[in-house]
Every structure is written in C-alpha cells, then in structure tokens.
Length: 503
Image (cartoon, rainbow, N blue to C red; front, top):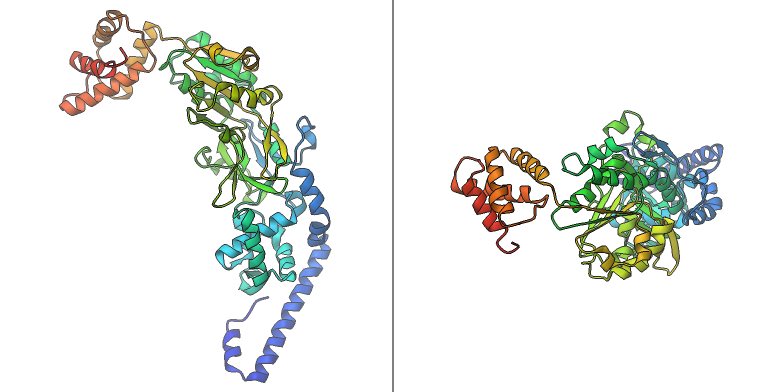
C-alpha cells in the first residue's frame, strides 16, 4: 500500500466525518492489497503455510548431524571452485533455509526491539536472508499482532514496528540470547560444507608446499616430511630447539591447502545459536573474483568467504577454550577453537606449557583425532557431534615422550624434528634477511660473526638468530646515525645484547 504525499495533511485538515471516510478508504485499500498479496502467495504455493506446517520437523532434523552420513545427502548446496572452496547458494525457500519459526521470529523481534522500526528490506539485510523469503512471514507476524505497519516503504515494502506484545516477546527471547545477527545455518548444512572443503581432500603437492613455505629455509628432508603430513591432513608433531621456526612453519602450512573457504556466520544446534565467524580468528577474503561469476542474489549471505583459517594458541589454552562459551552479559554462544579452525590448521604452540596438563588435552581429543568428529555440550545439557576437520599441529621444544603417552602419539601420525640450521643455511638466511632490512652486508662480516661468535664459543645456531641479530644491527645504526651497514662494531653490540643471559 502506498500513501499519497498529502494523506497526512488531508487527515489533519478535514472534519470528523470526512476523517472517518478517508480512514475507511485507506483501510479498504490495505485490505485489497493484502488480498492481492494472499492470492500471489497461494499461486506460488503459499510460503507461509509451508513454513508453518513443515518448518519445524525439517529444522529439528538439520540442527543435528550424524558423522559418516553420505555427503551426497547433505542439505548443503554449494558450487565448487578451484582451490577446494564451495560457494553456498542462496536458499530458494524458507524451508530450504533450515530455519525454525521460533528462530526467525526471535531474530526479527529482537532486531526491531533494538532499532524501534525498520523496513522489511532492512530486516532482511540484517538477518542475511532474501527479502522475498521473509515477506510472508512478516505478514504473519502482523496477523499475530507482534508487529504493525507504521508506514509505507519503497518498492511495495512497509516500515515495521513491534507492538507491545512483540516487545514483550522480544524481551523473553533476549533472556536466553540477545543475538540478532545473521540467521543461523543448520548444523547439518555446516557439516556438509566442511566435508566439501575438507583439508583431507586437498592433496597439496611439493610445489604447493614450497609456495606456502617459500620464505623459510628448510632442509629438503624436512620439506618432504611436511609434504606427507599436509597431504594426509592428519596430525603433526613439530619438536626441536626453540628458535628454529616451528611456529613459523605451522602458521604458513595452511597456505598449501588452497586459499579460501566459506563458513556460516552462525550455526543452529538444537535451537541454540552458536556464533562461528570470529574476526579475531578469521580473515575475510575479497569477493571481487566471486562477483564476476555469481550474482549477489545467488549467494547465501549467511555465509562469509574467509582465508583458510590458521588458529594459534599457546600457554593460554584451557579446557574452557575447547567448549562452547556463553558470554554472560549477552547470552551469545561462541564456538570453540577447534570448530573455528575446521578446514584449516590449529596450532598448539609451546605444547606442554599450557595451564592444563597435557594428559587433559589427551583425554579430551583422543577420540576426535581418531574419528574426525568431536562432542560438544550445549547449554541445555544436550551433547552433540560436530565435525573435527583440520590439520592439528603440536609444536614444542620439550621432549614429546615426556609430555604424552604412546596412545596419544599414535594418533599424531607425523613427528618431525626441526633441527638447527647448517652453516650454509645460516649464511644464506643471514644475507637474505640483511637484504630485506636494506642493510649492506659484505660477506666477510658473516665470516666474522660465525668465527667470533659461534665457532669460538661453541654456540649453536638457530634459524631465528639472523633475523633477531640484524634487527639489533639496524637499531644500532639508526641510533648511532651511521650508514645502514653490518659492521664488526654493530655485530658485537647486537651479540652482547642478544646473548647476555642465554649464552
């Protein structure tokens, strides 16, 4: 229904009888528009009726997931692209979206409670669903006296405002969770996307691994071992002396699996909404290339394209990080680290130095590492199964056998010792880093460093030393206001500062 620009002025200027006549005309017009709308709904299969009659059972069945199910039966609809990513296609109906009536109602009412009023298209943009899919449901909310038409909007839209009953119901929804962002994706759909983009099917080759680790200097033997581990997509144990690049290797290895994947912003698990996308853990990927192949309306906006995740945790890791976390002030549920790292890499850095004991992690993950699925507890007390699909990298400078037992090590099929660099490797890396830092470095200065500060005192070389020493050389030159050049004086000062306490 579209009001003429002078409707308000007419109502204000007419007498009581004429006012009633105008309001009657407007009411009749609204009823005619609604009748026409109902006819369109019936002609298209009556989306509202389908939503009410079928939505509940479908949502329940898709809010759970059974590992080992045939991937072809997954409700996830994705268009494959090179690199292993699958672009999620927009739902063609509310039934196909997998949302329950309560989930959709809660999101809309909580959004309106927070913002006061909004057009139907603004609501659709907020919850990341096509306007055509929620238009009938908005009419249903009006029929239920939860919202009202405040004014006409553009393109046959309306401005919606919650009624007192709608506000009261929104407040009840807020008691469990204040979330009103993107509509959640059912767990079964998410599991289907993980299966489609799994690291175990990427099979990176030597060229992929060299591109991923290109700036690192590694022995050929170590490179081949890493290639086998990434090709399997299973667990990996990196051990060796500190400063030899274990963390650098672990952080870069994800690049070998392909650049991008798609994840839902939130997941529906038995009626509970769990937020998966985390800007602090995930890096949104550019969409320019995708937009040359797809129209915006073809893509399910509830999903976001990200770089394959690499999540690194160190000594701060606790058991709480491995469970669904509820933010007390908002009631919003956050996905655990292992769920956020699916289709990528999860690095447990400095393994053995966490607040929890290594055997606690052993007991928590011994089944997921073997079966590739995990168990999580919902706030309702229900235990659910979720995909556990990432390359797990344990990095430590401690002796692995002193940390975990044989049963745990058996489930980490690849154990790689990252040894100290050879002298040629050290020299190569030192000259490369000097060039990167725009420092002039005559070869005799490398000879001086090796002979005076490594060979003579019997000091072990580490892969991190060239970078750390040259950064100190650069700071020395900047402070002394001298030319950016590696000199004996600068080397001696850097070595004195760097090795003063560690020898």
